[in-house]
Amino acid sequence: MEEIDLIRKIHSTKIEFKMCPDLWGLEGIDFSQTTFKETKFLNDLGTAMHENMNNLPSTSGGIYFFYIRPGILPNTDYLVYIGRAKYTDSQNLKKRCRSYFQKYPNERPKINTMIREWGPYLHLRYMELTDNHLISSFEEKLINSFIPPFNDEIPNKTIKRAVSAF
Image (cartoon, rainbow, N blue to C red; front, side, top):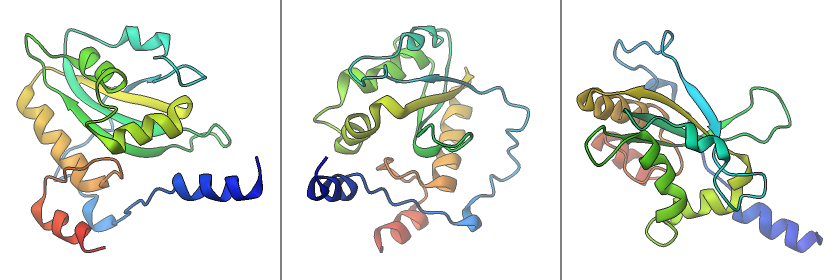
């Protein structure tokens, strides 16, 4: 890759993370005993879903996290998106997570960028839940705590105003 192309690529893949410890309190929620499962999102070429995506549960909803894993150092992941899948007759964790590859190229530019630029390095971590109230509550609290760069909606209005000021 030529130097000028590398500079352009570095600029186009810049991500801004907001790391505010004052927001990290989850009001008594303790995930230390929670079972999180994970899988690679796309194949190594980033052209199709990883075969393990077929193993996601279709009998529950839950909270899921997209993160980028460069694979250079162990335990070095970058959380870039938090989402939820409510459990209904027409929605579940498997269906919702798979929809990101199939549905959003034009509707959600940040999601499109996430998949286009980091697809082969994208991993999905999730926890299964069936209580839709808990699913919504956990998603809101986690987004407010981490403010992931590819989440457009920040539920806490105070945080939203602060984020838009920068």
